[in-house]
Length: 207
Image (tube, rainbow, N blue to C red; front, side, top):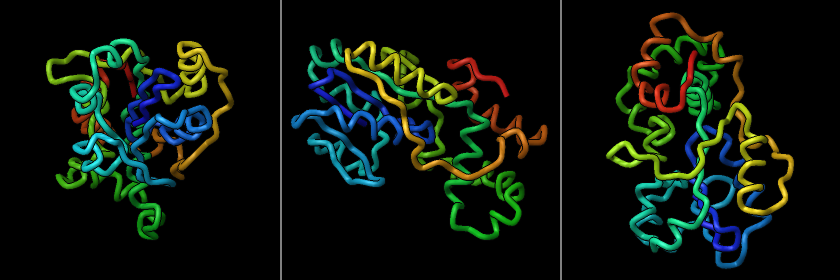
């Protein structure tokens, strides 16, 4: 999460959606009073204690909103990025097993098993994306939902809305894997479709 008073924006970092590319770009523009919560590459915590105690940087819009004034919440440009759920799942599996030689030897075996593990489903990196951008009543809390599939255009929109000059995004913390379609059979495709059914409906994704 980034809260920039200088740029008057709030970035909610939905896991596995190119968040570090946007973080790296925004950091160059942030002011001294701006805040970021992140735990990878650098460690920064929010000044809001209850959020700092969460420790990771994937703060939900519903978690931050109660701690901000209505003026800030209503006037700052709030955004996040989403990704094709079938692609995001493969990226999650590859990231969590990047140092596992058995996974590299037979990735399909692990990819077909991880979806059935309750512990994996509870991980913040695995959770459905709408949870980060919507409240419990199903209302979207952000002004703009960008797309990982066209991340540069997403960042260009943010730059235009917040009146700063855009720049070319770097590729940061990429997972190493083949095209996500290579790993799927019909059974796995349907399991992912069910688990991420709200994401698929709200953000209009297809396999």
